[in-house]
Length: 158
Image (cartoon, rainbow, N blue to C red; front, side, top):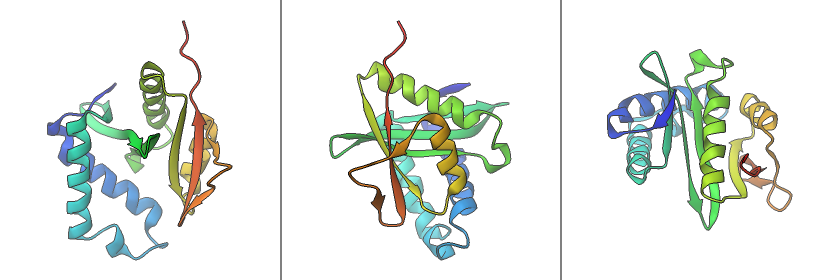
């Protein structure tokens, strides 16, 4: 089930985010950059703010948060800022369901294009986004150690 996140989900979201980030950053950047008390506090504060804005969707499985997605306008561009699935539940459709829910929200909001950044070494996520229809951004292909992707939001089915 996909639903809006609530403040009661904050601990589960922060824990899931930490586990997902560890899965793709470990071995590529220093652990303290993603797995330190300061980074966990910063991440938790960011998720709290996003939940308060109403910009977070949760995938729930068996009463547990199994995935999370967040999006918002960044410099007037709709941006998928986060999409994480519990690493123990990869490849069972949770990410695709979250992505589909995001697309529905973007369609309702009249958004026609969305941007995201994906870590250059996170080939699993890159493959996922390619399967969803994301393409490299021709105008801005990189942002530091992240690839920039674009998604053209299809018109809503009538």
